[in-house]
Amino acid sequence: AKPIIDLAVVLPAENFSALLGPALTALGRVGYRYVGVRGGVFLEKGPAPIRTHAAQIHPSDSFILSDILRFRGHLREDVRLRTDYLALKRALAQQFQSHRMLYALYKAHWI
Image (cartoon, rainbow, N blue to C red; front, top):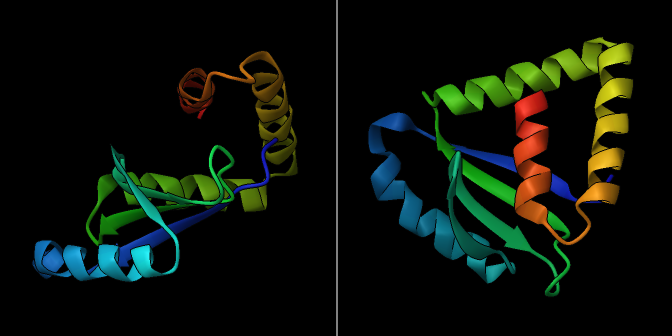
């Protein structure tokens, strides 16, 4: 529904804290802005108020990362799920045009 490129950045769990600062700095150099913690450490890129890219940074042992990758795998394998998810995202984008958080909440509930 929205043309946003989503990225997951995975850092080794054993030294995640030490690597996070340099990762944030490197992503900042290429235009990513720190937003906060939303599942993982969340950053976005694009001219305000339009976001063209989103990145989440996770430790390699993250349960949330496992869920994201599992859902991606299901979308790749199941045409009906992919079609239903696309229809949902389009409907939510239409209904919550100026309420990104409500869009995300309803989408996450469906997932």
